[in-house]
Structure formats: C-alpha cells, structure tokens
Image (cartoon, rainbow, N blue to C red; front, top):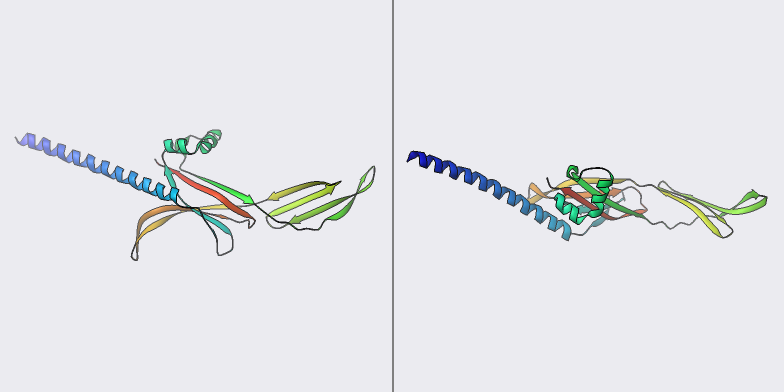
Length: 195
C-alpha cells in the first residue's frame, strides 16, 4: 500500500511541477501579447531633445520567427540577402529619414572656354550636414546634393510603477536620435525575436 501511495505522490508532485511550468509559459506569452498590443496601438512619438535634435520614440514588438515572416516580408528578404539565418536575429530596427531643406544662395557667373568663351551660373550652399553644388547652363540645372546623418538607437526598459515604487519591466522602448537638424525621422520600428 505504501508503494502505491509513494508512486501516487511522485506522480502528483511531477504533475504539479509540469503544470506550474506550463502556467509560467502561458503567463509569459500573455505578457508578450499584451506588450505587442500596446506597441501596435501606440503612436510614434516625435520630440526634440534638450540640445534641439529631432528624436523619435516607439515601443518594442516581440515576435516569433513565424510572426516575423508573416508580418514583415521586406525585412525577411533583406536578412536572406545578407545570408543571415532568421533564427540568429535578436533584434531588428528600421528607421527612415527624410531631408527637406529650403535653400537660398547666390548664383554667380563663371567663365568657361568651349571653343569660345562662355559663362555659366554656379552656386554652392553648405553647412555641417548638407553640401549642395551646381551649375545652370543654357537653362539646364545640374546639381549635386550630399546629406549626412547619424542615427542613434537607444533601447531601454520602462519599469512598472506603483505609488513611488518602481519594479519589474512594463515595456521595452527604443528612442532614435538623429544629428542632422534638416532630417525628420518619418518611421521607425523595433522588432525583437522571441526565442
């Protein structure tokens, strides 16, 4: 009789351990889905830093490999083009910037020799981030614009709050800061693959 009670006790303890582990994984999946829903329903936040630089903030999406393949085919194609296996990706960020500049600069005459002396209108405008050069020849504008920008992606945890106490992790957030004041971040996305 004791043998049967001992076997039943071992089976009961084993079943409880299995159920607690299963309950923990279900809770983690629920928290992941809640976090993803909050990220999908939130807007991209555009703001300026204290130094006057443009910045953007967005909440993290945590996807499984299958979810990523279904949701973002462009990213999966880019990963394939780079010969990287999708299962090795830990996180991916996508940031799009747009440069808009209104330029006023002086146009001056230049003398050019092409079988005969001729004049061209030349212009140049530049600052620390943009370099614009061009000529106007017989009503045709030829110009070259070079734009430089540095994007800094900062990924950080947002703690849960209760009264004055901070604990755990409420969400993971990514802030993107660009250094070029002419550029505006129009879209950014942060995806972390669930292992």
